[in-house]
Amino acid sequence: MGVFSRMTDIINSNINSMLDQAEDPQKMIRLIIQEMEDTLVEVRSSSARVLADRKAAARRLEQINSEAAAWEDKARLAVSKGREDLARAALQEKHAIEEEVAVVEAELQATDEHIAQLNEEVGQLQQKLTDARAKQKALLMRSKTVESRIKVKRQMQREKLDDAFQRFEHFERRMDNLEGQLEAMDIGREVPPDLAAEIDALQEDERINDELQRLKSELGEGDAGQ
Image (cartoon, rainbow, N blue to C red; front, top):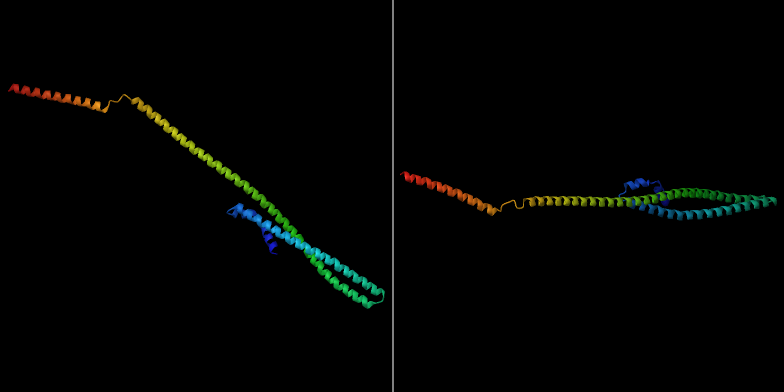
């Protein structure tokens, strides 16, 4: 009963729901498939024993039916010979055997029902196994597709990043060129700092000389008046 109970649990299980709740759907479905395959092996082994038992019961039924028929023939013979006592005893043996016939027939009927149920459950389990294998194949394909898409996305992002840096470097080169052009335009226009300072000093010295000459003139005019 343990094998059939476990098999029924698998048959009644919702594979999609189990996969939705699993952290690793691929691992989960591998376990489901392995469980189903192991169960099928056990069920087929059990089925072989059930079928063997049925064949033995069928042979036993055939044998006791033959024995019952033989006792009836003996009862007929006794009646024909006027031996009613022997005929009665033969019929009692026949009835005893017929009781065993009823037991064996009931056993065969139960075995046939068991085999029919077994065939139905195995068929359902086989269908579930087929569905699980198809789901496994679909998940594998989806996994490969997702991995490929992620790889492409990462490559595209890397290319965009490289392109952004190239644009930035291009802009820097343009600014360097513009600054170089600006500096080139100013070449030769600026007076060296030292030369400018000397010229300014000469101008300052000239002003001082003028002031000094003015003061001397003023002082000379003052002396002449005295």
